Image (cartoon, rainbow, N blue to C red; front, side, top):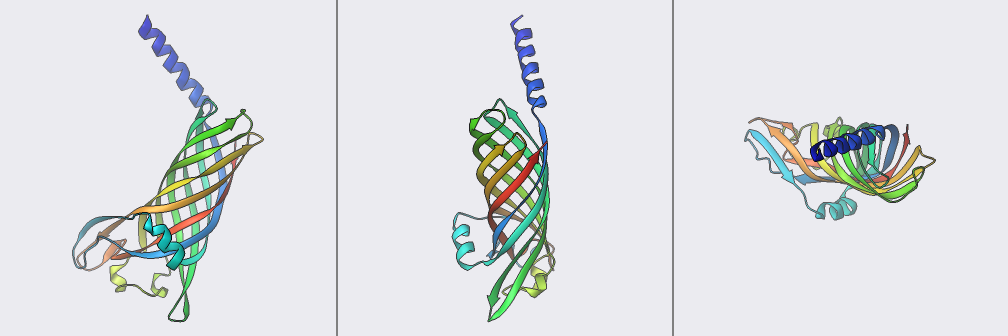
Length: 223
């Protein structure tokens, strides 16, 4: 009997959770900095590589990085377990452009971005129609660096690929108004980049890679 009661309770919780799953779409954008960092990849050696970056990346990015903007379209779902704890996942596609003077000449780094992210949400206040809280999570991002050859301060072009893959931490504050309008302030900081190289050239990542640190805002309409 106890097992049946527990099973019914869990089933009820699952149904309630699914009932609160909501689709959203939105826009996000803001200020970005691009910082060129060395990786774990070895020149002339084939293989897969993962490179980790610490908190110092933030200071370096805002002090020495190329500066510009980012914008993206997001699509996803969010689910709340009660009024205070929730999860969400989304896919995104967008664009990042930064620039910096190198040897007296302005150089741009332009990227087409795509990826997915996952967040945990915690509300401090919620009445079912409006809420205020924080969120944190992780993001996997692919970046196509289509004007790589125009950007200076790189190794041999064959040692840096146009195709980039990294993982970032995400965190910020979130408010919901009128049951449908979610406005957020957020920051994204890369902590790992991935690379793959043949013996002659980098296929993904490179001996050095550009890492984009960003702060900005987003608007989501929650259906």
